[in-house]
Length: 484
Image (cartoon, rainbow, N blue to C red; front, side, top):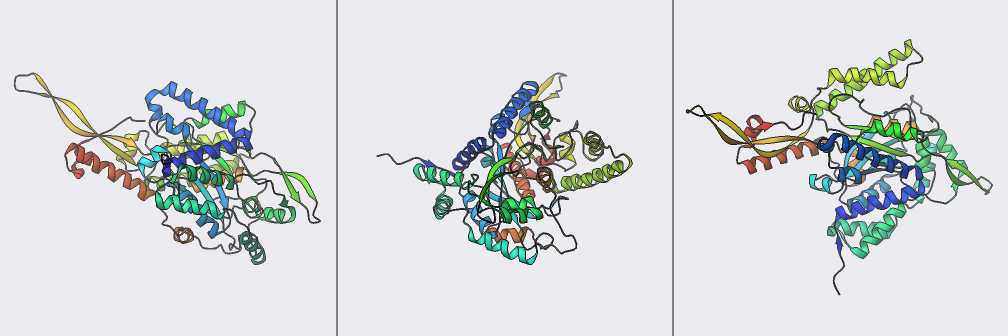
């Protein structure tokens, strides 16, 4: 008998992304509509823009690309999630604190699990933005509520022992045989399905009064995919097409404005969370039908990754836009989102250059370098010209693979039924990247370091191919690719 096929981590990752997408489409039909519209927008964009449409990734990659979002309650659950995603070659990257990123009550900290090697990202860039409650934060939870919440979370099991054992085996052995891989994918997908178990109504509503996000995490005995996000090449076009189909979108596209220069970082929007039927158990034990609005369909447009200097410029621009919008709104109560976007474009135009070349030359964006040999015509003594060839590199933008805490919080906030309750007079609980790494029991990758490493590796490889010193390559053998 031939040995069963063996699935490597990237194959598990790609299969898991497809499985989740199929499952979520059945649970949330509007997500399928979002996929259909995304495909149409991308196809039309490629037709209109040709090769430039694939400047930040091939259409095959963009079409398959997804990110998911899940929410858990404890460090133990977070560490278990890390084991499951580790089996698929997905590493924790970045630390996001959403507690102060929104005016609503969003008492979570987050990281993202994703591939970190350039080759793995090219194979399948599936990412999962994973949030965890901070139950010790007194701005949201009293000592009594924290105690009861911790007891509830400690009594539940989100991920069974067989799933975790298969995850550990896959990570240790670099994959799984086909039969074990199928079981791993089945169990992993099932772990994120929406449970049909009745929800304790009084407990859920008590948490919901604090935060709808807290209730979604700690008010039920399971977890689920909160949203899945396809990638689109023109998010403004998608927004308009979704509304034309009668699907209610949130009020704004989160992130940078649409403008004439290079797209940077991440723009996101979503359709509003839908009222989904759920069963509840009342205090006297009666099972009743009601609905919850916690899941939605998000879509994203990814741009060029920014350096630390570029990110500082971005953060300063966001503050400037906020302050200018607040002043404008004070003068004009009818100040609308379209006016805010116009204001944002004006700030963007004075903050960022309008070409990729300038973005790279000002060291605001990350770019890799691919070796080429360029023909050059030179004059000879006879007065004729002679063609020679010199080594050079072509600059290619690095796509932003990560998230923006403000945008994530903005999406969460736009889909909440209420702002919840937050006592600003209380002190928050200290949480940072080191704390998250300790909770995960794994190194937490810094996204800036990952991008810098991509650049360094590309320069070294290009220099070796061309037979030149890498230091010289960066100053004398550089050409630019597209200007947009």
